[in-house]
Amino acid sequence: MTTKIICTSPTFGQYSRKAVEMLEKEGYELVRIPAEEWKDPAKLINHVKDAQGWISGVSKCTREILDNAPLLKVVTKHGTGVDNIDLEAAKEKNVVVANAPGLNANAVADLAFAFMLSLARKIPYSDKFVREGKWKPIMGIELKGKTLGVIGMGLLVKD
Image 1: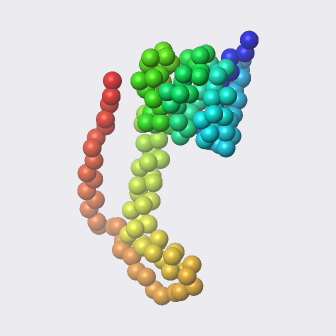
Image 2 (image 1 turned 30 degrees about the vertical axis):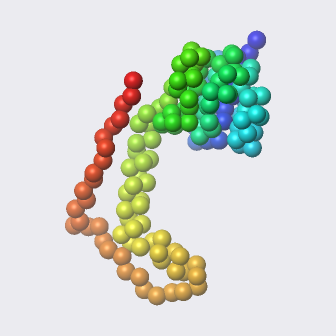
Image 3 (image 1 turned 90 degrees about the vertical axis):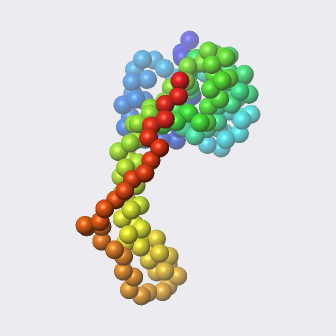
């Protein structure tokens, strides 16, 4: 019997096929579930009922779904955070929950920097203005010589 892993992450394997190839090489059956099916709990239950693994993106892993997944051993979040997974229900069902904390730290930093540049140069305002068929000089500010203060909450680690 082949070990079935369902995937509700639309981006899993999109940028690198290495993880998909590793699963296939080990003999796992990777079944991609289209969004129109994983967004409907009844349809998702139909897919998860005979799965041993689940690669989740933003799809909800609820108690109801876990109650209908007797073979499920692991749910792994393709991304950071596990707020879409019912951790208490998973623990009761002895389903291992995994994620990749910090894996997207560089991408988040890049995006924060892009937002800073976008706001300093008034790009969203300028874009809206031009799309409305208007045009006038709009001057942003340069970041050179500016001081940036970052206030954050730090890293939250839960047991």
